[in-house]
Image (tube, rainbow, N blue to C red):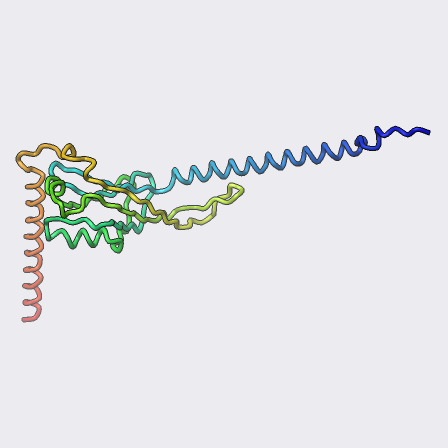
Length: 223
């Protein structure tokens, strides 16, 4: 009696049913994994859009060169520190201590609100561009915190409570790329004169305050 080999290797109806059931399950599993992965990517992209962003760059006010930090996002940035390599230098000796303190990474700015910009005067543009000893290229690292960040889990679930998250961004500030085109014409040195006048006013106010405090202390001592 001759036996056909056809049914020896061809799957039976039950085997076909099991095979298609397994294939359907595998396809559904892969689709679910891809869907969750895509959801996580979308949530992470949204988190990147919603995080605070600080920008550090030169600011030019006519002849004056300043280094500015600005919050260009819609979220609050807290505990901001700025570390510059090398440290900014100035021909104005009264500014050296301030610049070193702000840009050595130890000075903490409690918060920079959305849209807020803070600037520190370095020197006059022509002085920096013509000097061979003053640095004109800085690598400034800004480190700051998002106090209201919420982490995203694999299944797209966000943490119930805010988890402060730290960010660190590095900016290259190169004054040579601007050249003399960076400075506006200010033949009367208006901005420079205004800055000097404001500084003199602050010095007079500080001196007057010290005199008042000293006089009050003297009167209290005599009483």
